Image 1 (cartoon, one colour):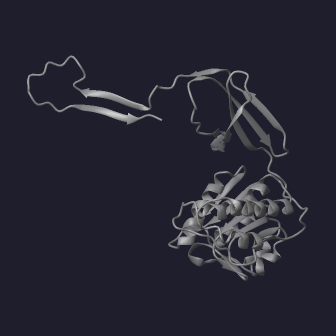
Image 2 (image 1 turned 45 degrees about the horizontal axis):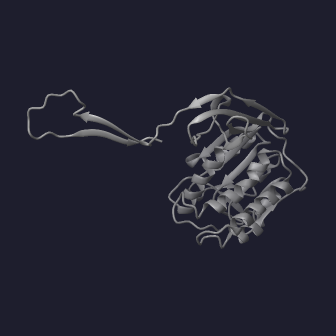
Length: 295
């Protein structure tokens, strides 16, 4: 199974935000990944990619309207003349209004039948996160092999959840986007899940206590999974890993016990001059230390 992303990046504020948040989605991808980034987010590379892997899980981000989907510098990527190339693919387009017309021709497609609005005050700020996080649930559920109906419902529920959360302004358009999201084809259809590990969760345990979730791990190269853990305190620990495959099977492995001895203070001071032992014969000396905060 392969996932194809079309991810433009040019001097457009909405596009800059979209390519940043879409890269975070790519980092969660459990399948083989092809990232058509920037200059590659145009018609020819997209057509070549989908011809090579017709049944790919395709995610496109860009501007659009009811007749076309665009990529780098507003170049048309998909329109009526080439949409048939995606007939065997599962397609999700984060783009305005494509599913008011053109998108309805995808046998298995999802996207928005009205303008997709979101708030933005900076590329990586929290105002945009609820919008992109909600949208991305479609692709995340797709990777899990969920049905089209389940994919759309999970995303709509996430829009609703974000809207219910307390916080600053910037949530006004979440219900609008939620209600604009649609899927095509039979809602009971599902993509064939990619064979392999779809997620790994890490837990820590002290003594005989119940394991505490650290969080989901991130897949890297050569089947390596990693996660940064901020250790709560000194003590003896075991780490428990729970891996889940494409069929929902799980396996748990626990490490042996290891010991953590954290410094009493996160502040470290190392004298440079004088360190001790020097014989000083001048009245004025320049004192020096290295002082740092140790995580």
